[in-house]
Length: 266
Image (cartoon, rainbow, N blue to C red; front, side):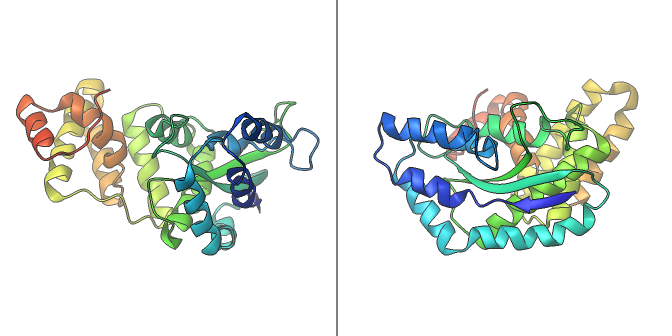
């Protein structure tokens, strides 16, 4: 897979510098569609909040000062060696998604889409698209760090390679194994759960796998344990923000609320 990094953070920062009015939104649409430009439609900008407030401006300034685009491009040089078996030319970039103060972004939806609903490079692109894009998301609720940039970029391209080799995840077990492998390849060090949450999440996962795949429950459990051993703390994303609330007992819900832990009820 040939990886070509396209810096979109300066373009996003330029849009942020405009007054927050309809003219900015129109400029965003024209920039994103870019139908007659060399790059074609800038698909990753769909993840950006065109009407984001000053906190996104500050984060973009911090990322540009950090040379986030340069860090990402250098990370791709490392990843390209292990993606040599994946065919296709891919445009790669970073985008800031506003999960902090904007109604444009639902982080849970975005997290699920970029992990489990995007396949590998297709054999043929749709007519409206000039290039296949892969993008790493940086979140407005998190600080600008070299680690965040590197992990976002490497996880995005390694995930593309994994999905090309293994196909889209079909169930929870596939999701956990996929993200465990991707996080190991990308060298991710977080998110981290404490020992109590890890133990509880393991219990929930075993219970779910026993219900959903009862005929192959032992195999499902072994796959889950393999994902855990591979360094995956994906449970903070797949389980911690969704299933943990659904499956927990009334007593644990009360303790979570008492501890002021934010767990969405979905």
